Image 1 (cartoon, rainbow, N blue to C red):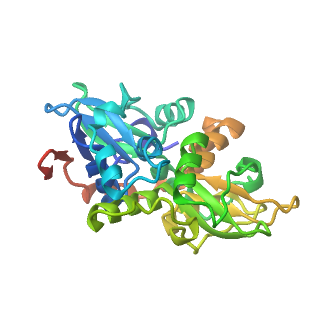
Image 2 (cartoon, rainbow, N blue to C red; image 1 turned 90 degrees about the vertical axis):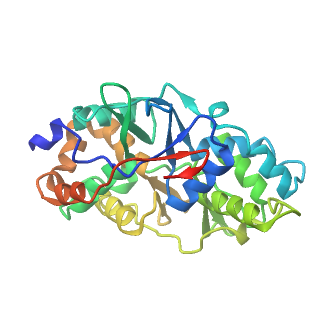
Length: 314
């Protein structure tokens, strides 16, 4: 394997935005929506890591609020709590000198979607995510000879287009899922609802003033209809490529012999593939990208970490 696998300094994003413990969940949700993030490191004034806030944490917080027909003001008030009350403390981290193997092991063993990268003093220097690794797998066109059906999830949590957005939030929180395929009465996929759609709705509530919160409205009003499909017989390299190309974290599998649907996600491409084929196999699937100069050119375009304080992003 290339020497780059022994040090991840070239891979992680240095454009990480961090937040302080007293930042509100509401403001953090808006930041995630605006920057297309799913994780925000939570830091002390010194920059030392204290925790991590995920989109799932926001979904869980929201789920406690939206079942009694709340107004927009009710939702905003409920989300004005500081992130220290809902964040994951003492997060799993890596250091720039850690190797790719260590990153994969931590992501898989702890079943997390992101690892803050910290220096010897615990100060955040960046973040590495499942999406970073999936993009490595998707760069090459050489097949891995692993079909999508081997690592996909065949037991997918779905929802009806007539269900309410509040029901969707509850389902995401209960089942610990980021996305819900939306099926019609004939079990055909009509669209996809993700936690990012929920964050977008929160932003509309903030900008829309008082009145109903909108969580009683139907899923069909919020879902994305341009769902990207993949065949269960396709190579997982194709799945990784499509995720990287279209910037999505999951693909629907509709051509199963059972006539049900499946779902393959970034987590499946890293955690499940590693579990079934081994860490060495997964690292080997990234070799093509590691041997190119793409990572170096990406590094040259990175900037210093930003921090969101009570006064906004710097």
